[in-house]
Image (cartoon, rainbow, N blue to C red):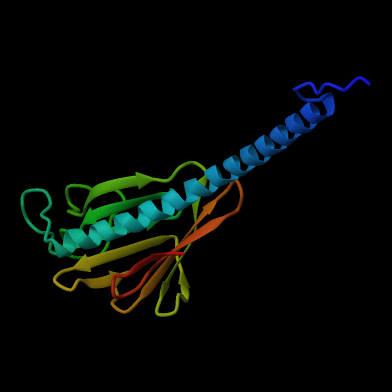
Amino acid sequence: MKKFERKNGFTLVEMLVSVAVIVLITGIFLANYRASSQRADLIFAAQQMASDIRLAENYSLGLVNYGEGNFPIGGWGFYIDKSNNKYYIFADVDGDKSYTASPSEADKTKSAKEVIFPANIVVDSIQYGANFETSSEVLNITFLPPDPTVYIVGTKYYNAKIVLKDVRNGLTKEIDINFFGLIEVK
């Protein structure tokens, strides 16, 4: 009797199944990669904004000077304008607890840093007040040392909420700032 010899290798069916599994896994990976890349833009923008608000607070706590070596009498602040998708870190040299969008020589409020959001990220809403009862197009937050004392829209004991939105997928991230100066990204 003749014994069957076993040949090493794959059958055509085994090869087709292997290729189909590889194609399926690759497709799932590429779909998840694209979605996570879109989420990453929103997360990065929210984290950068929270970090920059903390930067203004740290400038105030650290008594960082602005311009000609003087500490700004109004402290350091954060200003955001919903209509133009920008925010600013500013030195409040005139002490009015607000930022002027187009500073002139007569207005001594100066921007230390300007940040423009990516094209797909927009400011969805801005709310402030003791219980977020007021909506607005703009928001001023200033920090005065030594605690720091936090002024949201020129008032102590207010809280603020900024919601960023990715227009491609509708995802949102919320940045909360309370009157103690704590900043949280949700």
